[in-house]
Length: 61
Image (cartoon, rainbow, N blue to C red):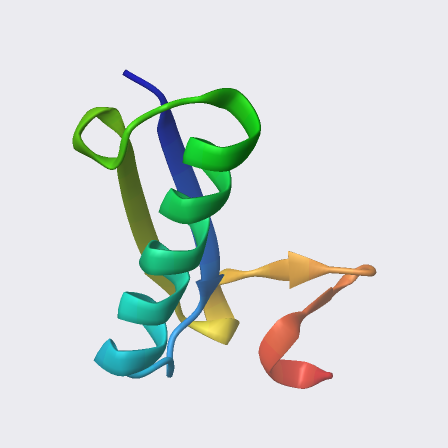
C-alpha cells in the first residue's frame, strides 16, 4: 500500500488535484505495477507564510 505525500502551496483547484491523482495513479500502475485501489495520495496544502525556503518565508519572495 504505497502512500504518496504531496506538500504544496495552497491555491490548486479540485480539478487540478483530481488530474494529479489520475496521472500519479496511472504512472504507479505502469511503472511499478501498483493498482490504483492500493495507492493512497495525500495532499497537504500549506500557506506561503508557513513555508521557509532560501532563507526566507515563501510569502516574502
